[in-house]
Length: 379
Image 1 (spheres, rainbow, N blue to C red):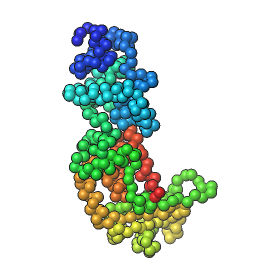
Image 2: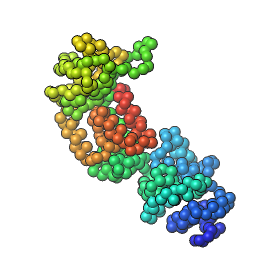
Image 3: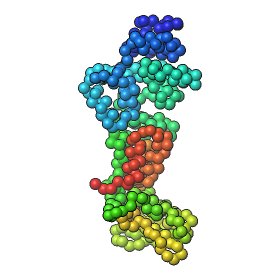
């Protein structure tokens, strides 16, 4: 390859993406350095894939492969790929390019390289996936992600790169059974976690009152509500009420309406754990009263709020969850799906929150969290 400038043949081969991988890398490096060749490239070569009929931009194709599109965008791109042989050929070409690049060792781009690429935004559409990594992370090059063509989600899970595939496989979580891997893939495709019907039913329905204020109730129960709990000694939590000197909690067996526990505690801490265990497999509801001296100044929940109900897992269900979690290891993704399937929505919400901290821009995780926050009612 010419040291001073790209030849006409090299320029044309680069524009058609017809160069060998090592030559393509060398051409990209040269274009970063050489303003004259960049100008020639823009002047003499057509865009790689414009917005015209039957064509996708490389940015769209990369986002499609990385599952980084919202549902409407993905539907539009999928439709175009189905209709247009040209768009499909461009996608196939990109997949082949990625596979070819995976055979080459990744290079980290230093600060100096970052500045050179960012200084020439017009070059980004020509450097192909080489510059895409700069826009995403700025650390390893794009082709080092090694995603499968059928990946539907790629995320950081506690420092481990997890790839979820449409065929139901999660290669990084090979300790999980095939059925568990398929459950994760299905939850990603649907954008919703699978919740047992009997747990979803615990959410009840909020009563609609005429003229009801939209502001949230200042005094309300927080946990456990519309969820299963792992054992019979869950931690009960509620929002503190200014002026309350103490709180009184009452727990009722939902089957027969009998109060099984009543306890009073100081107002310093809005949480409490029972000394005696509730019965495994039973469903309970609870209410908290805010007291000022001996006077009850507020209760939660109260109409129009639904009752605060929860279920204690059976011993067998708890053992099944713990066996599944042991296979999941430290994976927040796997545990979120496992916990949700067991009805442990409070614990699933914590796992999803941990994933969102590491992957703040993934729509799937935000949909999962919203689902768990809303405590879905039974259909």
